[in-house]
Image (cartoon, rainbow, N blue to C red):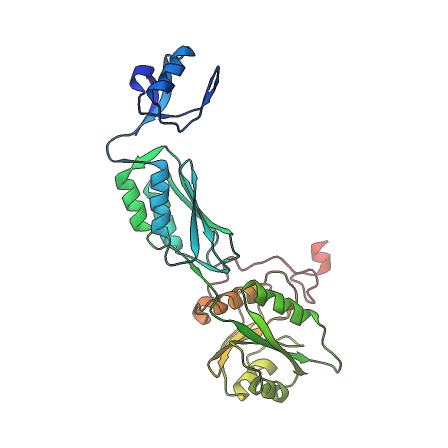
Length: 333
């Protein structure tokens, strides 16, 4: 593509680079100049105009953006919105978790400075109509070879994983006698609702391994089991993971490098995934349990291999009501 000022008699069919005011209206940038436009410019006293002229093999910005956006999407769940001026946005059609092949997106952005893709972070939960990514072609056209390379590099780099689970049961342990604080169940139900899951049951038992074991065995049918303990799980042999083992289940991983959310564990019982929630899950604020719950609800694998990679970016905003904050009050003064 050639860019720069040219005499009017060389501008036919070129793309107007900058908007030009006229006595009657204006010619907007991006316009493909025809004979009438050039005549109007001449009447306005313009002898030359700044344009972009496409070379053989160049792809106009809108067509290039659409081709690249189509190449990026893998599977259903992402809707393309053609905006014009070289931009196509990708929106989520429903709730889910966004998979981003970061290396592929980096490769796309390295093919040509005029070809760009911006996305949400990897594995971010999205709601319906949220913009997950945007493709923007900077120039009025790009070489076809560069576009081909970008499409090949980014093929299938974006996918929306919709929830596959539909229900969960919450088993909550109590340290002292009396009814539980309703906040834990309410906040959990809200978290599930964002993903289209329902809280099928909320069971409370004393904070003892034997009582929790029996509650797990008697838990109503649901796709997912959540455990929220009255005292935080601080060891692989603590009450909740031990109760899961006693019930015939397995504990796959204890702890995670995300804060808040360190004191989480995951496992399975009778083919159902089990998440031992950290105490911070009683707060609606983002914590490590959200990342695990969202992926499991969407049918994505979550084990030790995935959890240990959550540390980069895992320092989340502190929860003000946290019983044991990261630093002492005098340190934060």
